[in-house]
Length: 81
Image (cartoon, rainbow, N blue to C red; front, side, top):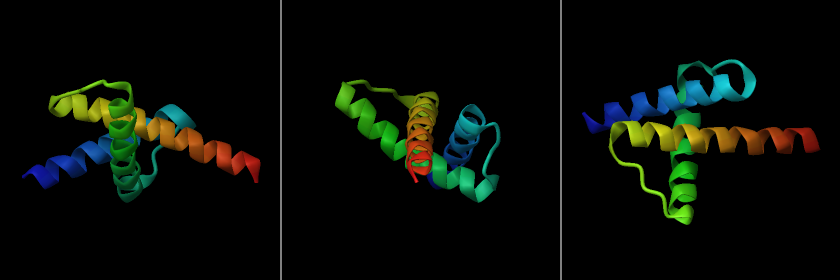
């Protein structure tokens, strides 16, 4: 059941980040990938800042913030080309 919750949080985080950063989602699979990568980035950033977010809502917030940062970096790289 934890794996399903992980995928749901990833999908929601990716969808929210996509809407915040470019005005649309990336499809179910794309949202899950962006959300999971965002969770990794967010976890790393929160760890560097000494911030801890617990529970399902904390995980979602961490993943969304990480996904927004990830999409922002991807946008910078695309503009540089």
